[in-house]
Structure formats: structure tokens, C-alpha cells
Image (spheres, rainbow, N blue to C red):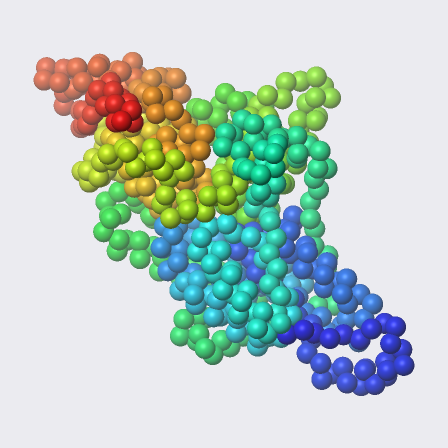
Length: 559
């Protein structure tokens, strides 16, 4: 519906309008939080507040009746369908009450949290909410996956019938999709390096700044919960009270964990209780915690990032990915803080290669989102290089896959990485490449199986980055690893875990073995063979011989 307000130039009828103003619905602007659970540098929230302030700053009649409120929809059945991990759902649930408090204290905005089973119910609930609450304008930030795009399209059509605007903003990336194209301006870059050069030139020339929402002098907040009659059986609401939102979140996480435990495909591999305990310790919730983590990384670790990022036994990576995934901090904020640190180094003629490396990781994150927007079929399990994917005779050996999931392949670095993932909900990026390449090249198992398993476990799992990483390892993606460049997991262990610290942390049964044996497949097989020094070790021999598996994979891809 369209909210009509008096013109400041229409003085002749002002008295009559004031007399009738009590009969007018209060102008209502609604912010829909999705994967942007923060106040600072939130494009949609800033735009919504600016619009409310601008449209009514000179309107004496309706200014005091303006209402800005916010909403978040939990959709657990949809999350299950999308393979969201329980650690990520818990991270969202822990963040929501903090967001609610921040919104109220800083902007006098009330956050309502609803639980609907899926996106279809979410559309129904949001449509009814907007109508019943006289919402004139709904704003949100774009999501780029297929179901999310369909949901937003359906809601746009429903709201348009009632003259309710639904405006979306680009916010997930440092630079929005389709903004970095080849020099002819018509196509997306297929290779990261030229994309990155143009991305870097563009972002440095853009004079990027943060978006900060304005607070209304008077925001007519509602204190009454909204009754959603048409979806009363599938949606319930907690409004404003952070303790109630916390309770709702606790129940949501518990129910979600139980649903995962009933999934026969996941039984026996991961420990969701351990994952929750570890992720809560490693990732304190909220925007402030995200900012503090970024500040600590830049102060303590970024100047060694180029080297230490590849050593899994060190806690030297940024640990920002989980916060970026749910939007507790913006990618722009990460870039701006890194760029500031870089400028300070350059003033003192210091080397900023480490900071450049980390900034390039932000660009990779953008790159995969840009690719997804250009190739939406990726969301439907299709490969970027479809011809390559179709000619490979992928394996669907459930026994091999189970060994990989459980960390029982007999390859120490792969197994340690998988057991770390299963216990913590996180895996170091170098190890993601090693384990993914082992599954897709040594075992020749369809990359989609591994892609899905990672999503089901990772606290920072998001489709674009996860899909891009898996297709890189499988040699089916854009700018992917050439099929003949296959990582040797034993050589990778020698290079990045030279003392086997990480391996022995997660494979305690191998503590007695020297690193020199763990870094050599031949020495391991000999040590575990009959008469070998470690024949009684409770650890399997490698399920494949890497040299032979590598040759078989190259032959398969050559077809």
C-alpha cells in the first residue's frame, strides 16, 4: 500500500490534515535481516533508515508516527535441505539476541524473530506481516542462490499487489556481482588473476566507505507480538526481548541437532555436540566479537599470513569466514581494515605482501559469488565445465566415501583434517584443498558428495565458496586446478606439517611414529606390514596407492 503524507507546502489544509492524522496508518519501514546480522556497514539497513528520515523529516504530521522495525525468519527445514551445519545454525541463534539488543540500544529498532519451516511459509508469513502491519517499504540485502532468488521473486509479486515496495541491495561482496567484467564489458572473467587485477584497481579507486544507519528521533516501536493467522501452525514469533530470542534459539538448535542425528547418512562420522562446544569457544557471537577478531588478526597475525596461513597447527588464519558467512561483519569492513594496515606499513617502507595475500582471499570470495550470479545453474549441482564433468566416470563407492568422511583412509594428513572437521566444524583452507583433491582424484569420487559433506559440517559453509573450492579441486570449475596437477597428501604433510604436530593432535594413535614415516607412503606401508616396527598400530594402511591413483585419475580426465 502507499502511505500518503502531507506536503510541507500545503499550508492551507494543514489544520484539517492534523485533525485527520490520527486516522492515518503510521508509516512503517521494515528491515529483513538474512545473512547480514549486523548494524554497522549494512547497506539495506542504512538505506531503509535514510529513506524513513528523508521522507518524513519535514512532515510535522507523520514524523512522530514513523515506525522502523526489523524481522528475521528462521527456516530450519529449508536449512536442512540446504545442508546447513548445526554449528552455523547455532552461530546464527547466538547472534540474534545480540543483534536485537544492539538494534534497540543504538537505533531504537525492535527485532522480531519468526520460525517458519521453509521459504514457502516464509513468503506467506512475510506477506501477511507486511499487510497487517501497514508496511509501505520492505528492504533486504541480496542473496544469490536459486531458492533464495525464487523466494524473493515470489514475495515481490505478492507485495506488489498491495503497493508494498520490496527493495534489495548488494551487500555480501566487497564489489557487487557483474561490476567486474572483461574489458569488452560483456562477460565475467573466467580466470581469477585478471579478475583480481581489475577488482583491486576498482576497489582502490572507489574511495570505499562504511554505511551507518541513522537513528530516528522518534521511532514508534510496537510492543505487541504479531499474530500471523494464516500461518499460525507453522510460524511463531519472539519480539524484541533478547532473552526470549535466546530461548527460541536454544530450542531451534536442539531441534536441528536432533534432526541431524536422525540422518542415517551422517551417523558415525561427526560429533555435533563436540562441534557445538568447540565452535562456541572459537567463535563468540555478535558484531562486536567479529570486529575484535578482525582487529586481533590484523594486529598479531596478518604480517605473517603469507607463510603461516598454510600451517594447520598454527592458529594464524583470520577466522573471519564464519562471521562473514552470517554477515556479522561485512566484507567491505574487512577490506578497509586491511587496506588501512597496508597503508601504515607502506609509510614505513615495510613489505605488505602478507596483507596483499589476505586481501586476495577476500577477492576469491567475491569471485565465486560473481561466478554464481553469472552461472546460476551451479546451484543445481551442475559443473562449470560441464563437458569435463560428464566425461569423467566418477566413482560412487560408499565404502571409500565412508572412510574419507570418518578420517580412516590411512592417509594421515587427510584423516587428521577430516577428524578435525568432524569434531570442530572447521577445517583449515590448505586442508580443504588436500582432502577435496584426495576424494576427487585419488578416489575419483564425485565432487558433489564431498561438497555436500563439507556444507553439512562447516560453521562457515556457504554455497558459492564451497562449490567453487570443490570444483577447483575436481578440475571442473572456472580457473580450476589442471587435472594433471594432483596434490600428493604425503608431500603436503611434509611441507605444511613437518613435525606432524597437526597429524598427531588428531590421530593420537600415531604419536609414536616419527614424522619421516608419516610423510612417506612407502615407509608407512613398510612400517605397518608384517614384521614392521609399527605393525600393531591401530591405524589402517592407505586405502589407495597415491602414485597409481594419480595415474588413473590423469588417464580418466584425458578421455
